Length: 84
Image 1 (spheres, rainbow, N blue to C red):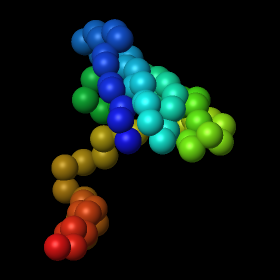
Image 2: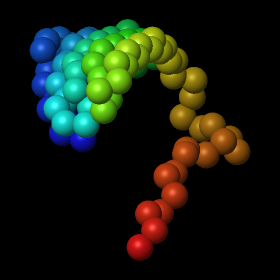
Image 3: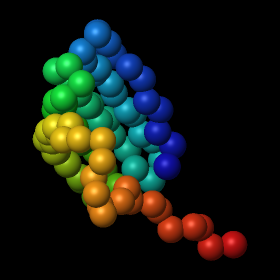
Image 4: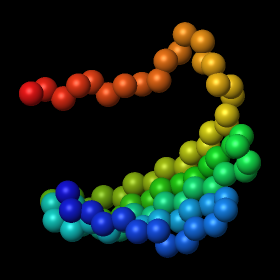
């Protein structure tokens, strides 16, 4: 994929960005994320374009809250090693 991201607007508690893609995937995506202190964040992402000539549109909204530093037996996800 040939995608170019750029920040459109940034403040102490939010960021808005855009990504423009050319090639097999053509289109534009916009994202926004904001946070309230160190405890909460929320945002959205929207993409509209085409993949190999077929129209595609995607959107999502997410939120998150800091719970605590120790997650007990729940460990962070690690991507598997890439095959050689």
